Image 1 (cartoon, rainbow, N blue to C red):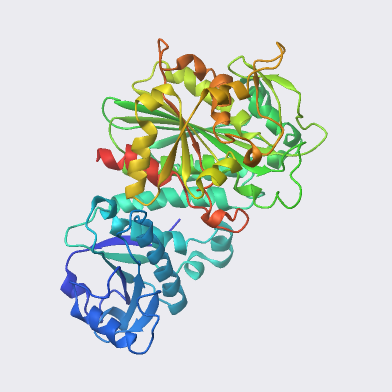
Image 2: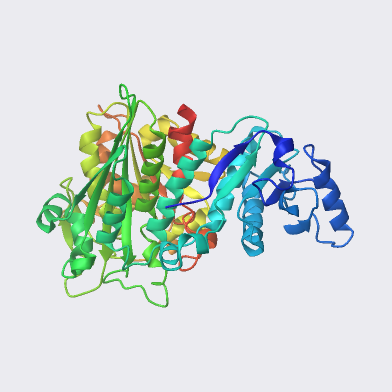
Length: 519
């Protein structure tokens, strides 16, 4: 699973000479001048006399005295407005990466110089590297069919800094993001539940993360009845049968903090009996982005091996198929936590998968050291409507008291993966309350989330009740912090679920908060 290796470059004069190991220089800046090399400014000035686009868009410029005799000047635009953030640098890096591919560059050197020295741009160089890797990534199918070197020709990226960069951290981050993109972005037959599980087994073979795959249908039915209901119509097709994938990491030394993750891995979502129509089924092979993101975070752990941290993840890999045995609205199914769930809409399947997993994790969290629970999912279109390309973080009371969403959002902001904090309110719990004594909780209404008031918040209330976490609120004897992470808006570039590249959210934000901040 190769990707461009980051190389820390501190010997700047030597690196900027021609004839070395670098065949192009990428200059990312909000200015046309450089404090590191007069040759950069001179090349930009000469080109501006010929091309009025200079300084307005990324361009390839002839530069006789720079590596490869090629300068790619990719301006960020203004960075000092209240609404600017480090993603301006990432965007510029992506444009430069595209030019590199078109020009045949295989070993670019990167300089990031910006005038704003505030904390919001403190990781600009690292974010530029991640942006380049995002732009260069091609789907697993393409790499296997055409060859890695053919579709991703850049082998290494030099990062110029006056101080030595910890490129090991960057490499670990990109390794995790690549796992997340591969799992999310691969087509639904190759990455059906068994294939999803196999990829995880191969990825974590001989690593610090252990993998256990549950495939027995009777066991899944008994232990994960809500999850199994979603999978029911797929069970008769062997290659579509569900899997529950458990990933575990425990760092060296005494455990100081324990994280539990439930990942939604719907490998294809037809909508079930509430069938998606009007072309809305296209792109639903990416409905496994939550589980993919969790697996990506586990890959970062496997690479970095932080001490004192224990992380347990369970991923529900399920295909929501349509068929004679499909689960249907009005069914009442008793979940693992003993709560009777009335199905409101079979296209609200992800929360049922997550509820059983969270119930299992809840039992473990009760005796864990400093536990925090999370669900990660491409859950609702409402999250994308409400927050656009930002991850939505919805907290319960203990998580709110622990400032969980705020700390994740701040860490992600610095690393170019911002998020929005959202609140769980009384209206959300009222919305899914039972209408009769026949059931304990309603999974959803029968309207799309995008046309439902608080459409991304009320599912968190369902998850709390259906998993039993509602008994572990802030005033309980054993409060358990729980944060629901909805990446329906942030999981795919430009909201193009059929053709857009997976972003690997929330790998970077989670790693920035729980790993990078500790090292």
